[in-house]
Image 1 (cartoon, rainbow, N blue to C red):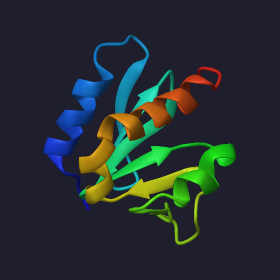
Image 2 (image 1 turned 135 degrees about the vertical axis):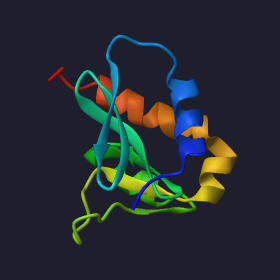
Image 3 (image 1 turned 180 degrees about the vertical axis):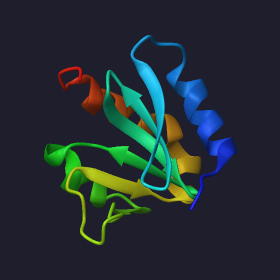
Length: 107
C-alpha cells in the first residue's frame, strides 16, 4: 500500500527528537512508536492515530475520521484521519496519539 512520505515528514517534524521515538513498518504504512507503543502513523494518504478505547467514540464523532479497520474488523481505540482533518489540525491529532502512547508502560 505505501504511505505519503510528505505527510510522514510532517509527522516526524512534529514529533521532534526524543529517545523513546522510533519508526516501524506496520499496517501497510509507517508507524511512529513511543517507547515501543504505537502513537500514530501514515497509511496511504491518511493518518492513523491510536486514541485509546476511552477516547475512541469522541474521535469518531469528529469530521473526517473513521474506524481503523485494517484487518476487516475495527480496531477499537484506533482511527483513520482523512486528508481534510489532517490539513485542519495535524498537530492536534499527532498529540492525541502521543498522549495515549505515553500513558502506556514502555515495551
